[in-house]
Structures are given as C-alpha cells and as structure tokens.
Amino acid sequence: MNQGIPTLYKFSKNVGDIMKFARHFFIYIFILNCAACVTLNETGQSVFMLTSEEQEKELGEKGYQEVLSKEKISKDQKTIAILERVGHRIAKVAGKPDYQWEFTLIESDQLNAWCMPGGKVAVYTGILPYMQTEAGMAVVLGHEVAHATLRHSGQRISREMGIGTALQIFSGGSSGDQNALLGLLGAGARFGTMPFDRKHETQADLIGLKYMAKAGYDPKESVAFWQRFGKATQGSAPPEFLSTHPGASTRIKDLQQNMSQALSLYNQASAQYGTGTSL
Image 1 (spheres, one colour):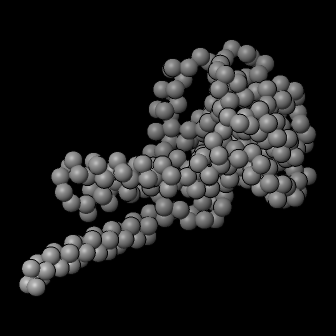
Image 2 (cartoon, one colour):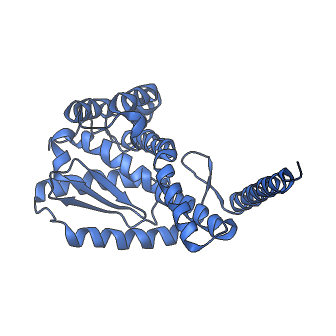
Image 3 (cartoon, one colour):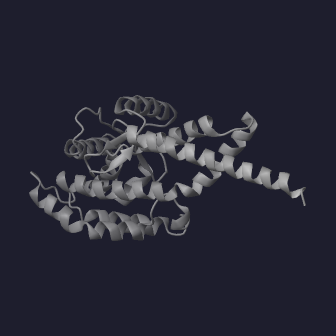
C-alpha cells in the first residue's frame, strides 16, 4: 500500500513541472505579444513582430542578390519593359515610397513569382502564358507586392523567433533532448502553421486586388487569371487542406466576394488601362 505513494508523488511532481512550464511559457508569450505588436496600415490588424522593417529590408536585399546570382536573368526587353511598367504602377499605389522597388524577369519554366521584403520582386517566365496581358501580370504583381507591404516575411520570422527563444528559456533536458523537441515541433508546425500561411495568401490576394484596381487595371482579370492558372495546375497541386496556398476555386470565390469594392476603386483610378498590352 505504501509502495504507491512514491509513484503518486512522482506523478504529481511531473504534472506540477508541466504546469509550471506551461504557465511560464504562456506568460512569456503574452509579454512578447504585448511588447511586439505592430498595426498594419493595410488591414488595421495588430500583428506579432520581432523584426524591424529595416532588418527585413536588409534580409530581403541579401536574399534577392543570392537568388539572382544563381538564376538566368531574361534579356527579353519587351517583356521586361512591361514588367517594370506594371510593377511600378502597382508599387506607386502600395504606399511604400521608402522601399527600393525592383522587378526582375527570370528565365525558368517555374510557374512562380515572389517578392522579398523591401520590394525586390522576381517573375519567372513560366508563368507568363497564364498572365496573357498586363492586367494578368498586375494580378500576380499585386499579390506579391502585398506580401511585402503586409510584412508577411517578418511575421513568419518573428513567429519562429518567438517559439525558438521560448524553448531555449523554458525547456529542460540536454541539448539533444531540446533538438529532438524542436524536430517534433518542426514536423508539427509543418501542419499547424498552414492555416496561418493560407491566411497570408488570402490577404495578399485581396490587398493585391485593390492594388491592381487602384493602378488602373481591370480587377475582373484576377478571376480570369486564376481560372486559367487553376485549370493548368489541376491535378498537380496537393489537396487544399495539406497546402500552404488556397486552391484556385477558393481564391476565385474570395476575389468575387470583394469584386464590388475593387471595381469602385478601379472606376476612381486616375487612369484606366483595362487589360493593357498583351504579353
């Protein structure tokens, strides 16, 4: 009968340690959130941020140059001129004059485009056929520029910094145990952060829709682009619930629900280019 007491004590002690860890962890996260909340002009939301815009710009510049050093830069002057024209029109309405905007065309079959923090944008030639026009390009560039203005990279970095710092402070055991725990969290985070990533993608779609409309491009072309792109990639993308990006049908639905406001912005634009030049 007495033999059960040490076991019960040990169990109780373990539970107490876990509760103490959890209490300290959440207090730490609460303090971090209070100390590092930034309000985004584009959405009015308060987000957790441990990096400054200057730090993000520096990282973006380094990352941009590293990628360009390994890629084949296009010499198609006609398309480059269109890219820069559309890009700078989008950037002008994005309200970040302190960003050093650059737009580069990369020779690659990849159906891809991206924007580093601070306004360093790259478009791969593989996606051009699905753009078709300047307006189609404005859909993609508006989306990528929105990632930069919404500081999505900084938010991801801050989230990882917060988790890593908290684990270093509060987790016990050997460094090997901590590495194993980090590995488990990494595997879990691969699924756990997907809604977070999809939320960023949806934000970029909708803010990008506003940007293209303000820049004078017909926002209805956003739906047409995603219809073309979705058809082309059908069957090759993972199921939406296992993807960091929303499916084309989800994007189209969200864009259509916000089209009325976008059309109003388009009608108020100082210049209206419609679909613009064909690529």
